[in-house]
Length: 171
Image (tube, rainbow, N blue to C red; front, side):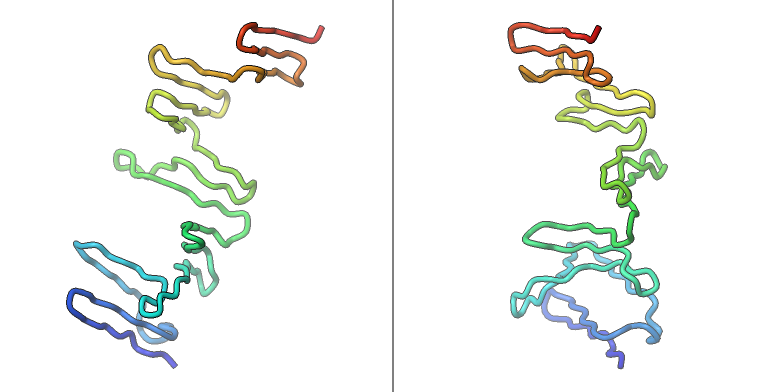
């Protein structure tokens, strides 16, 4: 029992109401275009009820969603151990910048893409072999007092207490 979508024109609003399944109704695509602001309301504006999510489905199975929960925007991949990939158009080429890796629950920044910290000249990145730290002119990389920098299995350590620098190594 498919109900046809209803288009309601009131004053300055255009509202499309749809209920039921569009499957087998001949509707294969819905396109909305505007040169003004567009609002996708996931609640009942008349009763003030909030909720709902935008679901992305593949053959009827949820693949992901965009939802609101307690004021937080949640972007979710529903497929086990799969990633959420962020790409940009860099000079005409689709380029991955980073991904949220669902298999290991980690954020992965693509090789040679910088994680900028406050300014473009303050960054860190990896090239697959080394980790690079960059700071601007006359900048420093600051390690707080009583925090050590260890090597290997902690057998070698450099640590400062704000006054003295200690370099220790296993013999």
